[in-house]
Image (cartoon, rainbow, N blue to C red; front, side, top):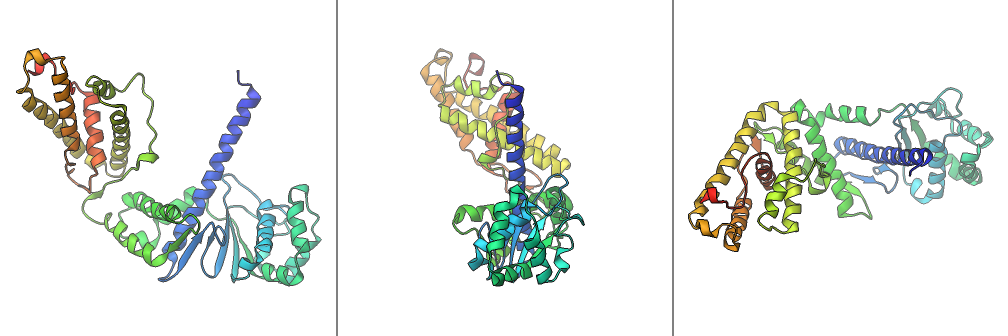
Length: 379
């Protein structure tokens, strides 16, 4: 049995992981903002040359979900200074070193009013500070730094405090001038598209995560154009982004697939498409509630097509074929014919993807009486 202490530790670990993830997502939002603000021919680096960097400025990003202060013993600041010193060959190539943080700086902190201090005063404050145990190793690195290098770093180092947290940052991006042509109700989706581009560059080159602004702007023009037509852009949901939700008992459409001996791989694809389509529909209705009638008609058309397809094949079977391998084979052929059919258009929606059609096929079967298996009533 799990003890209360173990449960508390588990919850603390889970929360800690969530906060770290939020911090990383916040970092990508900052990178996206820098991409939107960048000029042609520039580059933005992420997780190399700093958390986020361009040719002139290296930024360290610190996000705290709750209220947080930068005290004189702030690990955020001292660790940042230590990193600048240990990476001095990279540090000295930048004219600006920025700690971007959601934290506040109380007037009791040696870092209060930091950006207005002269280099000599900054140096005096950090070297005269008596460090706590948590920052002692960072402090020792700073104290051992040569006067020349420390002055170089402190002269370029600024703390940009009280920055918006991740929720506010997202809302601020929706107001960015680059997105002004996108209808307000579609800007969340537009940001997600651009956000996905940022992430994809890490996958393309994990050793050097960088954004070529010329490429970004070309992609952005294409991405944004989808949101400025009369049609609602189809909100693509990737396979890995949706976790199947548990239901009481087995999904009905899966049982109906088992009835005709479809393989487990086919069932897994069906489950993925089912939940992706479900999530896509929720997203479409959230951004455009007026699509409800169009989506209902789409499902009704799928149901009618299934019935017609099954009826047309039934003429090749007789009652004596029911529950034989011949009938099961016809049932499987029926399944694959329906799944292979191209996706139909949804009125008012652009670029409908095939997984949505397939997922709604399974939804219709899960909710209704249609089944792939031929019964006597079908003959």
